[in-house]
Length: 225
Image 1 (tube, rainbow, N blue to C red):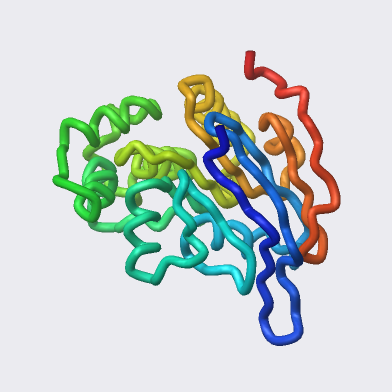
Image 2: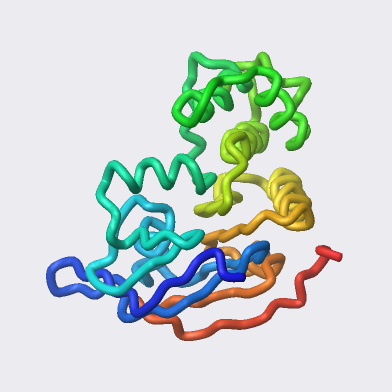
């Protein structure tokens, strides 16, 4: 069953085609990596999938909803209810503790629950750091708080933009191990990355160049079994 379908998607800025008639499907439970050089259209594609932008033409179906025709208010609600976003920059609130930063996502979705937020932090191995401020956490720990925040509302899709871009090798491996476990648990994951090592852990890699998909390859999925 397809969770996401992009059909003939184009995005045009002036005379620039950031995306040019893209077709792509992502099955429920699949882990997909998106790669490409700067200016290839990766960020544009992520913004469209993540309900942060709309295509110039074509249709995008997310969990059966045509998000390409929804208005901004509806897109905000769909993003809140169906997508867990993880960014390269952590976007944590400096004066809130780790558990409070996770609870912020609940505030916009339903009712904040410290118990559920603590459980989310436990999933990423940070229960013991729940009361720490971002300034008291390492970069890897801050990214794991972001992952917990993305998971708290049980999203249909986890969408990560360069999630290991600011991390050293040790913390990169910790984050990737969390992604592997999420995938084993049935999560659908799309990771935008410039790092071939990160992409190799996904089931498939889509390569973009100049707004076009130039390659789709099946990966050996090292370490996922």
